[in-house]
Amino acid sequence: MKESLIHQENSYFGRIQEYLREFVYGGIDGAVTTFAVVAGGFGANLDTGIIIILGFANLFADGFSMSVGAYLAAKSEKDNYKKHQDIEYWEVDNLPDVERQEIKEIYEAKGFKGELLEKVVDQICSDKDLWVAEMMKDELNMMEETKSPFRIGLATLVSFIVIGFIPLMVYLWDFFSKVQINIFLWTSILTGLAFVLVGWLKSLVNQTPAFRSIAETLLLGLLAALVAYYVGDILEQFFISNS
Image (cartoon, rainbow, N blue to C red):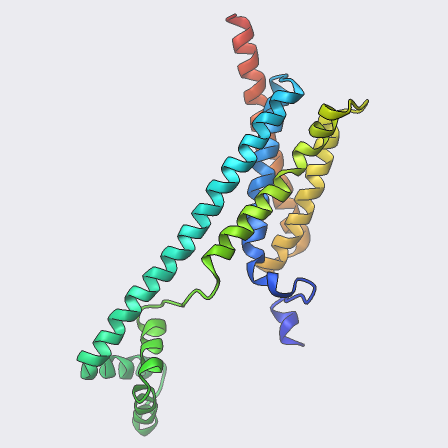
C-alpha cells in the first residue's frame, strides 16, 4: 500500500492540503454560526434585510476574530518552541556533560545498551543541531510547527467567509430580486450541502469514516440552528407580550 494512501494524502489539494485542517474547522465554524444567526432571525420573524445585516456582521466579525485567534495561537506556539530551543542551545554550550547524560538516559530508555549506546550518544553529541533537536523532541516532547501562522490565519478566514456565506445566499437573492420560494427551506438545504462538503473534508483531515464525519457535522449544524431558532422565537414572544 502506498504511503500517501495510508496518510490519506490527496494530490488534488496540492500544497493547500497542509492547511486543510484550518480550512475545515474555519468552514465548520462559519457555517454553524451564520446559519444559527439566520435560524434565530427566522424564529424571531425578522425582516430579510435585518437577517442579512446580522448575518454579514457575524460573518466578518467572527471570521476576523477566529482567524486572528488561529494566527496568534500558531505564532505563540512557534515562539514558545524557539524559547525552549534557545535554552537547550545554551545548556549544550554551557552544561555539555549534563546534556550528554540526558541523551544517554533517553536512549537507554529506548533499549540501547553498551557499545552501541555509546556510539549513538557520541554521534548525536557530535552535531549540536542534532543534539538540540533530540532534546526538544525526546526530553521536552516538543515538535516544531512548520506551517506559517499567517497562512493558518488566512486559511481560517477564507474558509469561514466562503462557507459561512452560504446560509446568506438565498436571503441576499431575495433581497435584490423577490423570489417565490420558501427562503429558509432552501437556505437549510444549501447549508446542509455545505455541511456535507465540510464533513467530508474533515474525514480526510482526521482520517475517519466519511459517513460518520458528515453525520457529526450535520448534527452539529442542526443543533445550533434549533437552539438559535427557539431562542429567537421565545424572545419574539416575550417582547410581543410585554409591548
